[in-house]
Amino acid sequence: MTDALVVSAHRNPTDTLSGFEEWEHFMEERYPTPLEGQIVPPPMQRTMQRRDGYRDYRAEARPGVKEFYRLNHIHQTLDLVKAKQKDFGRLNRKEMSVWEAIELLDTIVDDSDPDNENSQIWHALQSGEAAREAGLPRWFVLTTFIHDLGKVLCCFGEPQWAVVGDTFPLGCPFSDQIVFPEFFAENPDLKVPEYQRPHGIYEPGCGLDKAFMSWGHDEYLYYVTRDYLPIEAQYIIRYHSFYPLHREREYLWLLNEQDRKHLKWVKAFNPFDLYSKGDAKPDAEKCLPYYRELVEEYLPGRLKW
Ligand SMILES: [Fe+2]
Ligand SMILES: [Fe+2]
Figure 1 (cartoon, rainbow, N blue to C red):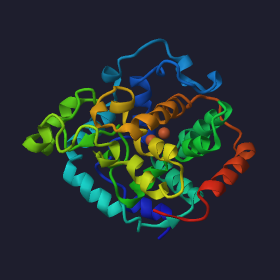
Figure 2 (tube, helix red, strand yellow):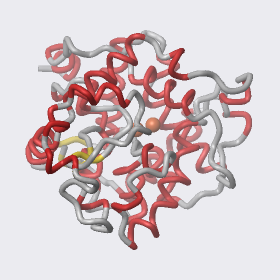
Figure 3 (cartoon, rainbow, N blue to C red):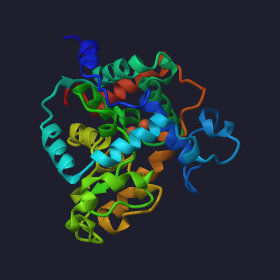
Figure 4 (cartoon, rainbow, N blue to C red):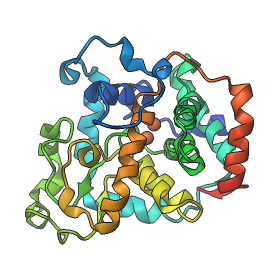
């Protein structure tokens, strides 16, 4: 079966977003400005300069986005996360290079969006180039370039609510700073008293590594790449969608010393993810050789997915 056939065979009837960009655009609206003192992408690339002030992200959320969050908040439970970690942690789905994964991802996303201006390779290149122009180290540029590759989960039959979305820990109370917290009312974990104690199943300061994060592309790509990348890169990959922590300052009680040390990289990465989707498109022919070399340096050959 070709990859295109695999994708359409696994097309999930519960998918509500017209493409992942819809969720990402929503996040950009929720967080229209970077945190104070952050290095941001060069002005030419910033979409935010076209905005006229703050907009009410909740009022503007498209029905698809809202429904996406409803499904995400109902279905992400501690049991589900444990099962997904066990299943996908085996990395027995496929062996492919970073480039094959990028191609596969674009097959999926473009299927729902004929405007390939929005394709995942452009997001990879725009965010990567923004980090390179800002003078960030090679490992950071590489991480920025590959950070969303975990979205290939959707070609293994995973619905969108188990691929994207801002992440949060399970097994402890849901923060009311998570987008659309009201949708947690129907989450079965709400009825488990052990999970609803102040720190749930965790000891304060136990460290993020012990936390069962809602399942999605962050944790999955961390499994695929963790043996190859420096720890700072692993933090970015694993927690880049953990907005309740890195933007809302919730769940700080989970952190240990190592987390506190490396959280700055997750925060430093965020503007390159969120604010690099401008009109200025990198010259792919010119910059691809740089990325080929970079990928070859850190993630050579085929990886297990
Ligand atoms: Fe992401
Ligand atoms: Fe991204």
